[in-house]
Image (cartoon, rainbow, N blue to C red; front, side):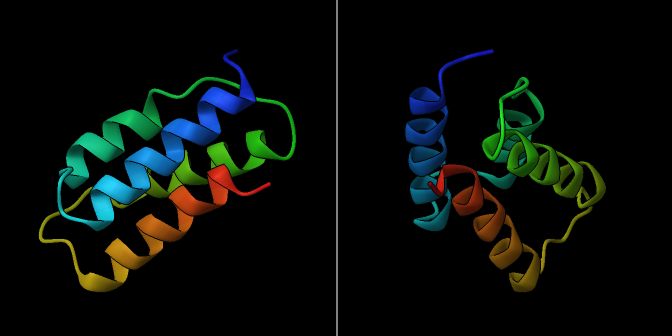
Length: 79
């Protein structure tokens, strides 16, 4: 388990880079799927994001999927 502060900072960075088009979705997906266990409330949000990215791994990716991707990433870093 890593620190919550590191998780929040990383999630914000990944989200910002993805939203700006500086990070590919597959890279974001691999990052999310590589996250470990965290305590509540972040742990539940990480598990939800992992499940989302595990299920949504098809190409092409619609704008709606990208919006939900960003919502999931923002949820991880929410207080």
